[in-house]
Length: 320
Image (cartoon, rainbow, N blue to C red):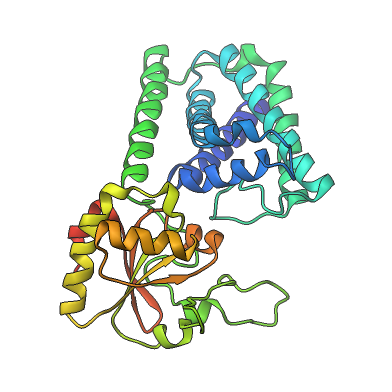
């Protein structure tokens, strides 16, 4: 029985750490997912939407810290019962997604591993069984090495998680699992491969008032896209820096466009107010959020291949 306890804590701890880490590197993705859960068409608790990001960060950090805590044996009673509460929350969300077919991807493993709603639910069922088992065997969960070592590792996991969160929110995800990551080719991502799956890049277009310029721009070698998925939510303090790099890119022979899902009238006002030297194209907001987490953010393309991506705060790192 004691051996089963050790196996269970390793499985639970390992899965919680992995699940937390792949979301920790991109907490904005989890924010979008919780906004979807809180929306009127899903759980209908829209008053929580403004708190989606802190809620996502809280759960992500809790996953990682509790995962390490159960592995090293830090305050086993508190840890196990906290894990039980957390898995019940996840179990409800995945069941709701699967049963009502409301959220087709729960985001359990971020963008790293895509699970169907029912696969996510069954995964949480197994974890629930293991954690319930651990609640009956708490006395067998002992600290490895010493209590002080367990405490140090647990608190270290907390501080490191919070630092990574701060870093990726200020810059961009430290690991990008999406189809628009640096090195990925958007043209190839749109290709249908007869495997019954939706291509990783879909709903991608770059429209002016008359045409979709995506095919033309994806064929060029030097393209800079300034992505402002929602003008009302953008960091306007970044526009002077954005304008500076856009002007420099033009001098280097780049084709430069802004891309947004905001209304054209609002964009024209923003162009005048911030003296922006580039025109805007339209693209779906969800697609833009997937392309880059910055708002505004900068993406450099070479014949459809993403060569550079930066949040506006790191615009000076661009190489031309």
